[in-house]
Length: 515
Image (cartoon, rainbow, N blue to C red; front, side, top):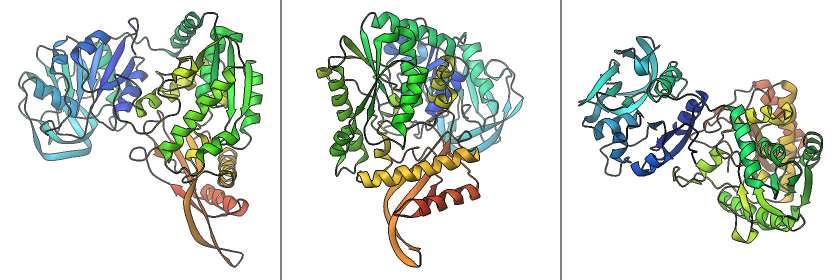
């Protein structure tokens, strides 16, 4: 998880919808951080030796019977603590303060009056716009000194008189708090004494050296999807151990149109690595026959991938390691870290370790990174921008974009619709302005009229989002004429489709993918 020579801040997660956003904002200040369980013991935290702790917000009240609590001894470790919203209330309660139901709840923008323009609020105006989202608030402060207030919240920020413990009732991590970055930076640098050594160039150098040391003279096979994550992982490995890397690209029958040839061209040109393309279409489609549950789809796909790699490994001598492009959001959403949050949002076929029968050790050089950080690593490594800026594509492929049963005819419909969508986004200039866009084939048929005749055909949903961290996302406000053109082309060119809908859900509460 953490390394002794890397300054780290830990975020204790109390179920906040903004937990991952806090992590992103901390890393933007060039300080490495990780999200961990809220009940991580003081002994374990001391062992990890972070420079600071941030207690996230959360939906609970501190007085609820099953409200999530932290180990109260963490406040006595001498490690600086910043509580945000629920985290502030928890810290105040643990150290002698009083939390009560607010007479006036605050949701949305508010203006705080800063009383102490030092420490956390150094460089912050005496009046500042912030984002509030709370029903409880701190009443009696005990040994805490109020630092800021609003018209309806007398204690909007605090510091302890003797301990390095601070609290904010508002959310500095959201863009609706314009001074939030300054406040977080003050906590990290003024209070925690961080140096800001989390830099992509340093990460590349350290990772390459670590890979070189670990791998030695052994061989590595790298699972390759053609997306930015696996491509960057492969590039790091090639830089570290060169010809000892064999990249394996599995054609699972769940790919977009033209994907196999695109991967071949890219990797023969940019990597000159040993590339194995395995045709496993029949195996995957057979395993998915009749399966509708998305978790079961992911589970079966994961098992078949393992079997395919196991077979391919036998053709390459001296293989000791299997490398994957696993990212930090994958680990979080899968509950894949022993110290991380336990919530399992969805399975990821590339998270969870390897079966013993494979006899391989797992290498995940990007496991600590968010998507935008991976792109920066790719640029640092000199990968083509067309590859680095490519929209994400899920590991299970189109299987999780064909809702309901997966079959070759339904995959064909989806491929055609998805190709039209991407063509129109690229030709209009919107592809580069969006973070991820794709088509989804719904398990819904509807009545239509085509050529003066009744139809009863498939429905395609269009999804396009904008995000900087892929943990939260807003739907893209595509122009109406562009949406109309996409819809018209799909209905006219894709046989069996008579209706196109546009998904305007944000994440949360929705996920980016439908399954």
